[in-house]
Image (cartoon, rainbow, N blue to C red):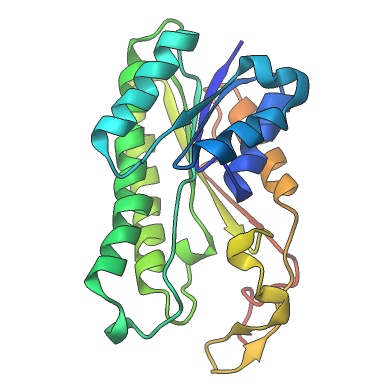
Length: 248
């Protein structure tokens, strides 16, 4: 049986991906900050709950990350898939008004957290038998194009693309594949206001469509299920009518 870790698994995209992996037969480690939400998410797997493990984790903390991966190896003996999903943003305020503490919190979670988890995953994957595994990073449309007033989030998502490429390159020698899914407007707490109006580059507010997070779950299951000699390097999954393609 294959084993997966999903960070930020208590809500939103992380929860949807963790549930989809569990439904596909994976043993899944649900990692996140809030234990109650992780426990609730695990119960949503139904009969698969017996092979799912909630592990409260702060991805900003190296010790907490090390404990997550040690617990995974102790419980399941190996790791086949890591989905680096944990992430936060800031309120949509002008860059010059963004407090350093707000900037740092986003960088620590979105970038440092993914790096720390990637390190630990590689250490397990390169040493296990059979060797190797797959790391999938949650990028974002913001890995290509920013929204107004999103400097911290956009900077970390651009950096995530660099981390994905470096991991893909450095992992080759160890049969470790790395890819990235860039998601546009999945329906979560973070996008709840989009149907009511989102600030556009021209200064106007415009309603934007969203998509069910279940679609993201199925996409990640596809990426994760490929043999290690094949890799989806980058996938973009977005609401068809969101204002990204073209000029607007």
